[in-house]
Amino acid sequence: MTTAIAPLTMTKRTNKHGHTYEYVDFCGVRISFREKDTDRRSWDAKARVYGAADALVSDLNEIEPKYILRTDEDSTDVERVQEQMWRSWRDTTKKIAGQRLSTLVSKLVEVGIEGVEFKLDDPAKNGFSYKAGCSCGCSPGFVLNGRVRSGVWNSDISLTTLSDGIEKVEDEG
Image (cartoon, rainbow, N blue to C red; front, side):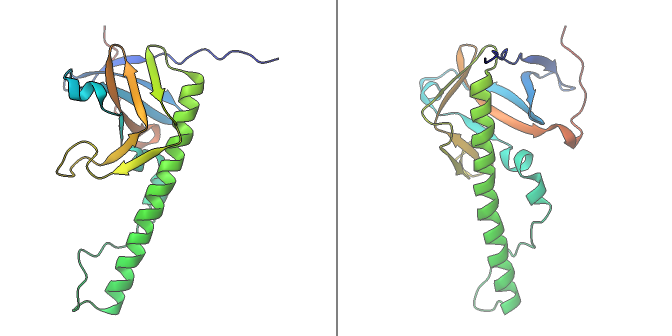
């Protein structure tokens, strides 16, 4: 006999800057939803997930090797090895973050969130993009294979860990 799981309920908060946002805490992660702009381009855009690399692989971020800005013909052998170590760490960390994100999204789709509709072709297929939020590369993130609708409009998702000392804010109301 299977028991039905009630969908998660969103919490609405206002931060110290007066910005109101809705979120749900799930699996040790705070998942907040931000509606996209109301233009046609945003209406068709796939959902972006920001903060996954920080929230889902914080254990791997602790072992990040030294980053070498640039290696060229004047680089030492040690600098070349350090660069390769960092690139290997980066690529593996992105891959693991993507796998953990797929698991999290699959669980969210299974449990459901009240007022949130997931229209994903395959929750396991998401790609990392350095230019997910901006063409200059200032807001990297994962691009989900579909859309997430919070209320009427498509939304993007931000993830933060609950153990990172998220500031307590007052309930709106």
